[in-house]
Image 1 (cartoon, rainbow, N blue to C red):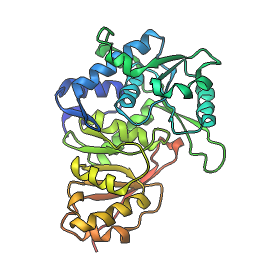
Image 2 (cartoon, rainbow, N blue to C red):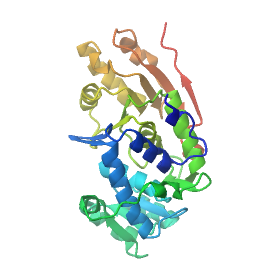
Image 3 (cartoon, rainbow, N blue to C red):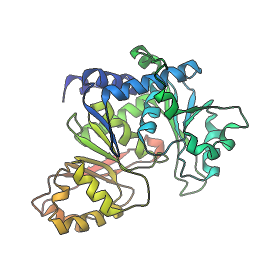
Image 4 (spheres, rainbow, N blue to C red):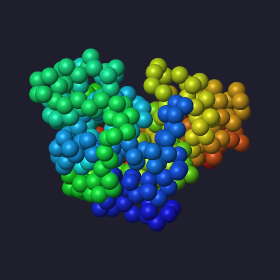
Length: 329
């Protein structure tokens, strides 16, 4: 672990990201399909969007809605909100209008970051309160748009809110949960250390933005200097996931749902599990893990991973407890 990653206590996500970008601007930061962006390119886009948000009055305790699917634009938007000092509020386009409206009513975001293809989802979120909409792709493509500069990274504070996200609603009406920057940094530090994420890691992100686990999955690699690899949205396809793990040499999969990962292991058996050779940490959550289903991979010559069982409610900043599973007989 380098000195930059030694201690994050008392720091903010925006400042930590910009420090990584300044340290290794040419390193690969985000893989989104065929597009690959370096830390320098990502930082430039984040600062451009952050400057726009600051000009619109975004700062501490000001919520910003992000109505985007899993994409490079979402990564830029999340980081830009935090760099500007605001409160990241994910508005997953896959959710029903009622869920999006409930979160918007709770947080009252004065700005929503989106793209033209999602304009039909905006009226219920913006019309009543005159919310400003920012077309993220157009702003990023505007060469004349100013950048914020690294000084903006200090607009946030440990005691301020970092994000607001809804619970799943599995036990009733979803409720909005606000998480402070200090709690977020504590969770990201745990994720970095428990999963062994470092600047040579390649971390796969498959979680929808409406789930709390997506926060750590997006941010931990980018604050650590690792590569964040985005899995394409769409119906779950274990064959596509296995191919993605192999092609991108994914070393950290955090988190995976056991019932979704078991079919991946079954498919990998046909190739002697070589597609899973690069994995060094697999974090399983949301369901009870079953080592029996994973045993063929564990007993193969291509098993080099640690397997974690993680659990935590949204109110506990995502993680409350975890255990490393014993994979030896």
